[in-house]
Image (cartoon, rainbow, N blue to C red; front, side, top):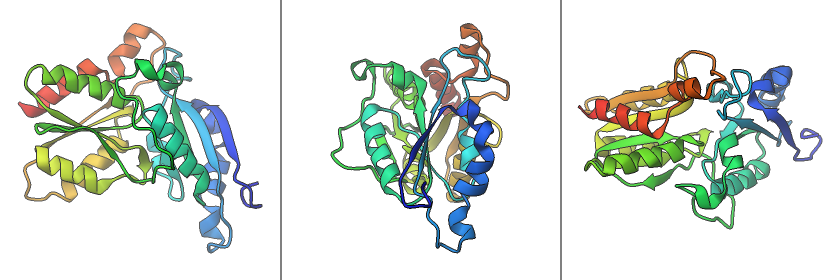
Length: 258
Protein backbone atom coordinates (compact mmCIF):
# COMPACT_ATOMS: atom_id res chain seq x y z
CA UNK A 1 0.00 0.00 0.00
CA UNK A 2 2.76 2.45 0.93
CA UNK A 3 4.70 1.78 -2.26
CA UNK A 4 1.49 2.24 -4.26
CA UNK A 5 1.09 5.81 -3.01
CA UNK A 6 -0.96 5.48 0.16
CA UNK A 7 0.20 6.36 3.68
CA UNK A 8 -0.93 3.40 5.77
CA UNK A 9 -0.82 3.39 9.56
CA UNK A 10 -0.40 -0.22 10.65
CA UNK A 11 -0.77 -1.48 14.21
CA UNK A 12 1.02 -4.39 15.82
CA UNK A 13 -0.63 -4.83 19.20
CA UNK A 14 2.57 -5.22 21.27
CA UNK A 15 6.18 -4.76 20.18
CA UNK A 16 6.83 -8.22 21.63
CA UNK A 17 4.84 -9.65 18.70
CA UNK A 18 6.92 -7.86 16.06
CA UNK A 19 8.86 -11.05 15.40
CA UNK A 20 5.94 -12.39 13.38
CA UNK A 21 6.55 -9.73 10.70
CA UNK A 22 10.19 -8.77 11.31
CA UNK A 23 11.36 -9.79 7.84
CA UNK A 24 8.92 -7.34 6.26
CA UNK A 25 10.16 -4.62 8.65
CA UNK A 26 13.93 -4.88 8.35
CA UNK A 27 14.28 -6.36 4.85
CA UNK A 28 11.51 -4.46 3.04
CA UNK A 29 10.04 -1.55 4.99
CA UNK A 30 13.51 -0.29 5.93
CA UNK A 31 15.41 -1.11 2.72
CA UNK A 32 13.18 -0.85 -0.35
CA UNK A 33 13.86 2.87 -0.83
CA UNK A 34 17.61 2.22 -0.86
CA UNK A 35 17.40 -0.95 -2.94
CA UNK A 36 15.35 0.84 -5.62
CA UNK A 37 17.88 3.64 -5.95
CA UNK A 38 15.36 6.08 -4.51
CA UNK A 39 12.61 5.27 -7.03
CA UNK A 40 10.37 3.65 -4.40
CA UNK A 41 9.20 5.38 -1.22
CA UNK A 42 7.68 3.59 1.77
CA UNK A 43 5.66 6.28 3.61
CA UNK A 44 4.11 4.14 6.32
CA UNK A 45 3.78 4.12 10.09
CA UNK A 46 3.97 0.99 12.21
CA UNK A 47 2.39 1.72 15.61
CA UNK A 48 3.03 -0.63 18.49
CA UNK A 49 2.55 -0.60 22.26
CA UNK A 50 5.60 -0.98 24.50
CA UNK A 51 6.54 -1.00 28.16
CA UNK A 52 5.92 -2.71 31.45
CA UNK A 53 2.53 -2.91 33.13
CA UNK A 54 2.87 -6.28 34.85
CA UNK A 55 2.23 -8.54 31.88
CA UNK A 56 5.38 -10.68 32.02
CA UNK A 57 8.32 -11.38 29.75
CA UNK A 58 6.45 -11.70 26.45
CA UNK A 59 4.30 -8.57 26.81
CA UNK A 60 6.51 -6.02 28.55
CA UNK A 61 9.49 -5.19 26.37
CA UNK A 62 10.47 -1.94 24.68
CA UNK A 63 13.09 -3.18 22.15
CA UNK A 64 14.08 0.32 21.02
CA UNK A 65 17.64 -0.92 20.52
CA UNK A 66 16.43 -3.48 17.97
CA UNK A 67 14.83 -0.89 15.68
CA UNK A 68 17.52 1.74 16.30
CA UNK A 69 19.99 -0.71 14.77
CA UNK A 70 18.14 -0.85 11.43
CA UNK A 71 19.18 1.80 8.85
CA UNK A 72 16.27 3.16 6.83
CA UNK A 73 13.78 3.47 9.68
CA UNK A 74 12.73 6.37 11.87
CA UNK A 75 11.71 5.71 15.47
CA UNK A 76 9.40 7.96 17.50
CA UNK A 77 8.76 7.48 21.22
CA UNK A 78 6.51 10.19 22.74
CA UNK A 79 6.42 10.79 26.47
CA UNK A 80 3.12 12.68 26.72
CA UNK A 81 -0.19 13.19 24.87
CA UNK A 82 0.82 16.47 23.22
CA UNK A 83 3.97 14.96 21.75
CA UNK A 84 2.11 11.82 20.70
CA UNK A 85 -0.16 13.99 18.58
CA UNK A 86 2.59 16.08 17.03
CA UNK A 87 4.94 13.17 16.39
CA UNK A 88 2.20 11.02 14.86
CA UNK A 89 1.33 13.86 12.49
CA UNK A 90 4.97 14.06 11.41
CA UNK A 91 5.19 10.28 11.10
CA UNK A 92 2.27 10.27 8.67
CA UNK A 93 3.57 13.27 6.72
CA UNK A 94 7.11 12.00 6.19
CA UNK A 95 7.97 9.90 3.16
CA UNK A 96 10.08 7.54 5.27
CA UNK A 97 8.97 4.43 7.18
CA UNK A 98 8.41 5.13 10.88
CA UNK A 99 8.17 2.88 13.92
CA UNK A 100 5.90 4.64 16.42
CA UNK A 101 6.07 3.51 20.04
CA UNK A 102 3.10 4.07 22.35
CA UNK A 103 3.85 3.36 26.00
CA UNK A 104 1.12 1.34 27.66
CA UNK A 105 1.22 3.41 30.84
CA UNK A 106 0.55 6.57 28.83
CA UNK A 107 -2.39 4.87 27.16
CA UNK A 108 -3.76 4.03 30.62
CA UNK A 109 -3.14 7.40 32.31
CA UNK A 110 -5.22 10.57 32.15
CA UNK A 111 -3.39 13.72 31.10
CA UNK A 112 -4.33 15.38 34.39
CA UNK A 113 -2.48 12.62 36.27
CA UNK A 114 0.84 13.08 34.45
CA UNK A 115 3.79 14.96 35.89
CA UNK A 116 4.67 16.12 32.38
CA UNK A 117 1.93 16.55 29.77
CA UNK A 118 3.86 18.60 27.21
CA UNK A 119 2.76 21.63 25.24
CA UNK A 120 -0.13 21.47 22.80
CA UNK A 121 1.12 21.84 19.24
CA UNK A 122 -1.03 22.91 16.33
CA UNK A 123 1.40 21.33 13.87
CA UNK A 124 3.61 18.28 13.61
CA UNK A 125 6.80 17.98 15.68
CA UNK A 126 10.02 17.63 13.65
CA UNK A 127 11.91 14.39 14.11
CA UNK A 128 15.33 14.73 15.71
CA UNK A 129 14.24 17.72 17.82
CA UNK A 130 14.46 16.93 21.53
CA UNK A 131 12.82 18.99 24.27
CA UNK A 132 14.22 20.33 27.54
CA UNK A 133 11.51 19.25 29.94
CA UNK A 134 13.24 20.66 33.00
CA UNK A 135 16.27 22.94 33.23
CA UNK A 136 19.09 22.18 35.66
CA UNK A 137 22.77 22.76 36.33
CA UNK A 138 24.09 19.71 38.20
CA UNK A 139 23.40 16.80 35.83
CA UNK A 140 21.53 15.90 32.65
CA UNK A 141 19.07 13.03 32.32
CA UNK A 142 18.18 11.89 28.81
CA UNK A 143 15.21 9.58 28.28
CA UNK A 144 12.12 8.92 26.17
CA UNK A 145 8.63 7.51 26.59
CA UNK A 146 7.42 6.81 30.12
CA UNK A 147 10.94 7.20 31.47
CA UNK A 148 10.48 10.97 31.11
CA UNK A 149 7.68 10.81 33.69
CA UNK A 150 10.00 8.91 36.04
CA UNK A 151 12.88 11.30 35.34
CA UNK A 152 10.75 14.34 36.16
CA UNK A 153 9.80 12.69 39.47
CA UNK A 154 13.46 11.92 40.15
CA UNK A 155 14.42 15.53 39.46
CA UNK A 156 11.79 16.71 41.95
CA UNK A 157 13.14 14.33 44.59
CA UNK A 158 16.70 15.61 44.12
CA UNK A 159 15.61 19.25 44.01
CA UNK A 160 14.52 18.87 47.63
CA UNK A 161 18.16 18.01 48.38
CA UNK A 162 19.55 20.97 46.46
CA UNK A 163 20.49 19.01 43.31
CA UNK A 164 19.15 20.51 40.08
CA UNK A 165 18.66 18.06 37.22
CA UNK A 166 18.12 18.93 33.57
CA UNK A 167 15.72 16.50 31.88
CA UNK A 168 15.81 16.06 28.10
CA UNK A 169 13.07 14.21 26.24
CA UNK A 170 14.48 12.69 23.06
CA UNK A 171 11.02 12.40 21.45
CA UNK A 172 12.60 10.47 18.59
CA UNK A 173 15.37 7.89 18.86
CA UNK A 174 16.00 7.76 15.11
CA UNK A 175 17.10 10.45 14.48
CA UNK A 176 18.10 11.78 17.90
CA UNK A 177 19.13 15.30 18.86
CA UNK A 178 22.88 14.89 19.37
CA UNK A 179 23.56 18.63 19.53
CA UNK A 180 21.11 19.35 22.35
CA UNK A 181 22.24 16.36 24.41
CA UNK A 182 25.93 17.22 23.99
CA UNK A 183 25.35 20.89 24.80
CA UNK A 184 23.47 20.00 27.98
CA UNK A 185 26.06 17.43 29.08
CA UNK A 186 28.87 19.94 28.59
CA UNK A 187 26.90 22.49 30.62
CA UNK A 188 26.10 20.26 33.59
CA UNK A 189 29.19 18.05 33.50
CA UNK A 190 27.23 14.85 34.10
CA UNK A 191 24.98 12.72 31.89
CA UNK A 192 22.74 9.81 32.82
CA UNK A 193 20.84 8.11 30.01
CA UNK A 194 17.74 6.25 31.19
CA UNK A 195 16.24 3.54 29.00
CA UNK A 196 13.42 1.04 29.55
CA UNK A 197 15.07 -1.31 27.07
CA UNK A 198 17.80 -3.82 27.94
CA UNK A 199 21.14 -2.39 29.06
CA UNK A 200 23.65 -4.16 26.81
CA UNK A 201 24.21 -2.81 23.27
CA UNK A 202 21.26 -0.43 23.64
CA UNK A 203 20.23 3.15 22.94
CA UNK A 204 21.74 4.34 26.22
CA UNK A 205 25.13 2.94 25.26
CA UNK A 206 25.00 4.64 21.85
CA UNK A 207 24.17 8.04 23.35
CA UNK A 208 26.89 7.76 26.00
CA UNK A 209 29.44 6.68 23.37
CA UNK A 210 28.51 9.54 21.05
CA UNK A 211 28.86 12.12 23.83
CA UNK A 212 32.20 10.62 24.88
CA UNK A 213 33.53 10.71 21.32
CA UNK A 214 32.49 14.33 20.87
CA UNK A 215 33.68 15.68 24.22
CA UNK A 216 37.33 14.62 24.30
CA UNK A 217 39.13 16.79 26.81
CA UNK A 218 35.94 17.76 28.63
CA UNK A 219 35.15 16.47 32.09
CA UNK A 220 31.75 14.79 31.80
CA UNK A 221 30.62 12.01 34.11
CA UNK A 222 28.74 9.44 32.04
CA UNK A 223 26.26 6.78 33.13
CA UNK A 224 23.53 4.43 31.92
CA UNK A 225 20.46 3.20 33.75
CA UNK A 226 18.43 0.58 31.92
CA UNK A 227 16.86 -2.86 32.30
CA UNK A 228 19.36 -5.57 33.29
CA UNK A 229 19.80 -8.34 30.74
CA UNK A 230 17.02 -10.55 32.09
CA UNK A 231 13.49 -11.28 30.85
CA UNK A 232 10.93 -8.93 32.40
CA UNK A 233 9.39 -10.68 35.44
CA UNK A 234 5.64 -11.19 35.70
CA UNK A 235 5.74 -10.42 39.42
CA UNK A 236 4.97 -6.77 40.07
CA UNK A 237 7.54 -6.73 42.87
CA UNK A 238 10.30 -8.15 40.67
CA UNK A 239 9.30 -5.96 37.72
CA UNK A 240 9.80 -2.96 39.99
CA UNK A 241 13.33 -4.15 40.68
CA UNK A 242 14.45 -4.29 37.03
CA UNK A 243 12.60 -1.29 35.55
CA UNK A 244 14.03 2.21 36.14
CA UNK A 245 11.89 4.24 38.54
CA UNK A 246 12.07 7.74 39.96
CA UNK A 247 13.83 6.49 43.08
CA UNK A 248 16.34 4.34 41.17
CA UNK A 249 17.07 7.19 38.76
CA UNK A 250 17.68 9.50 41.71
CA UNK A 251 20.03 6.96 43.31
CA UNK A 252 21.97 6.50 40.07
CA UNK A 253 22.35 10.25 39.76
CA UNK A 254 23.68 10.53 43.30
CA UNK A 255 26.27 7.85 42.57
CA UNK A 256 27.23 9.61 39.35
CA UNK A 257 27.73 12.91 41.16
CA UNK A 258 29.82 11.55 44.05
